[in-house]
Picture 1 (cartoon, one colour):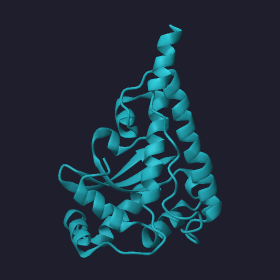
Picture 2 (picture 1 turned 30 degrees about the vertical axis):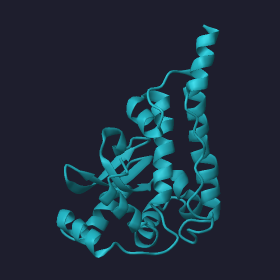
Picture 3 (picture 1 turned 45 degrees about the horizontal axis):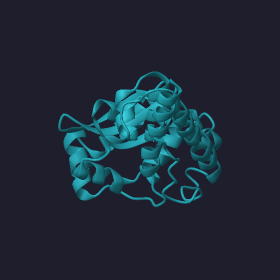
Picture 4 (picture 1 turned 180 degrees about the horizontal axis):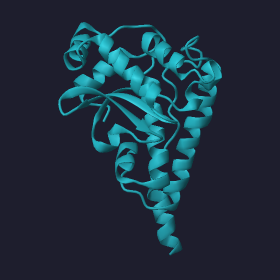
Length: 208
């Protein structure tokens, strides 16, 4: 009924594109302002806009983005998960080069053998993901682990706590690195990961 449809549209959640946590040129030269203009301003925005269109037309479970990701399938899931993944990814990056705290470094060494072993495993997951997807540092079953997911898939949808992610969709790096995903991954891990964000996620229980 038209009245029912109108009420559903009025009750449907609406999402805005979250702003970047830093200026568009803040990650240069590792990630250029041009890449962020397209990646955030076009790709991320498209996921948010398409999600709003979809949830305006069909019933969704949940009001928050996380609830929608965990309860949806198909096109709604793809756009909701990509909207969440991208917002999480922006916060995983830092304009300043940093290192993990001693406590986080010890935690990584405990579960991976050494910090360098963790770096190698994260890089291998990012470079080894065939096609589009993500590489994640997660906490699963009480241990730190590395996962790779294809397309829009996210560990958060399964209740796994996410600490960091690297976007390996081609639009994340092609302007700056062309087909050299491995170089993009190496530069990101060495110079742009936000270790403070990862540690906050580990200690606070957010990120999932």
